[in-house]
Length: 229
Ligand SMILES: [Zn+2]
Ligand SMILES: [Zn+2]
Image (tube, rainbow, N blue to C red; front, top):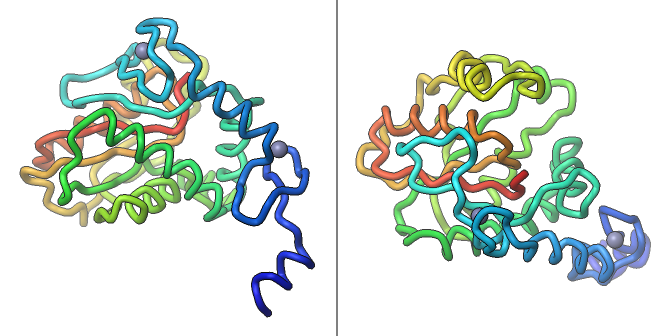
């Protein structure tokens, strides 16, 4: 069936509010404008737009060159809702939409090498089994496709516990017990690595994963997320 007939039968809908959108647009006009607001919302620390902010999270490491993201994360805002959708179901359009903006933040925040490797913070395997998708993996693949970079899995999640009730120090210890390098992790010697996750909150997870990638030889690790809390 041709695409035009398909779009007549199943008109594209905004994934956030379900109102109808034009074929080439992901978000409707209203949700897009709210999404842009969160993207341009000034960071409370540096005053720069969220998509240009390079502030380090509470827990950070010199092993990570930078922490870049696109928008201020709020579960109810369009950006937050898109991430929740991606956790439920792998949706190429949503992943590509967010990855395009992540690529912009990345290109603004560092000098990206053409041989950089894109990898991701793997989701808890039991959540992947239950909900069927790993949103950070989907984002990292879409980003790699968009920037014509190589993408590979490097890290393993041994089963993470919720970080919500833990202190910063406990979060770091918890993350250390959760993540390890995959047995078949590629050799990263001298490579620039872009580490992708959906959201950064305290920074413990990204910190531990960046340290692991460094230990495998990465010359620079750039942490890149869609949302920043
Ligand atoms: Zn909408
Ligand atoms: Zn900032």
